[in-house]
Amino acid sequence: MNVFLDLTLGAGLAVAAGLRPFLPAVLAGGLATADLGLDFDRGGWGFLESAPFLIAMAVGFAVMAALERRWGSERLESGPTGAAFNGIALGVGAVLFAGALAQHTSVGWLGLIGGLACAALSQSVERGLLARTRARLSDLAARQALPLYFELAALVMAGVCVLAPPVSLVVLALMAWLALAGRRRESERYAGLRVLR
Image (tube, rainbow, N blue to C red; front, side, top):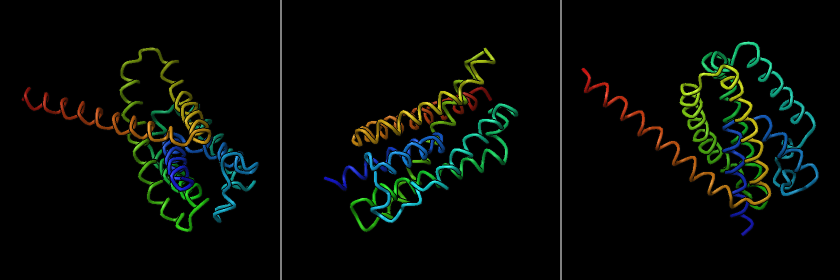
């Protein structure tokens, strides 16, 4: 039972980190320092709850927020800085999953693979949702506030998954459904363009 809970907890944290990496990592590490639902020390991933890691995540959040404010989220996401943040999100998702899985098993490193997959899934969903939502919003202020909503969603998702790890299964199912729906929309759009030719 412990391994199942660790798997679902790791998956939920990785999905949250795939959306936005920094606040979920700070929340998970902060809870782990007090052994509230997490204990990364138990599996040898103690750096996830260390002060330097938590400070680095907080600084990463501040830098990302400042760049989004200065450049705008669309410009940030499309450039090399956005690619770097995406890579950080994949890495953070992988190590959070591994740290959660290592709490009661000796094969926590397998969580790196699962974490990469879960974070990549939520990243692809986030990109599609952001693009579609921006296209529908005419208000500039509302478009600029979108990244904040994703930050809050990632933070709440991480918190809920620590409190009730099986909820992660629902989150994963929702992400998979959103990913499939987005691909279907894209294929229908391209099919329509081929017909117009």
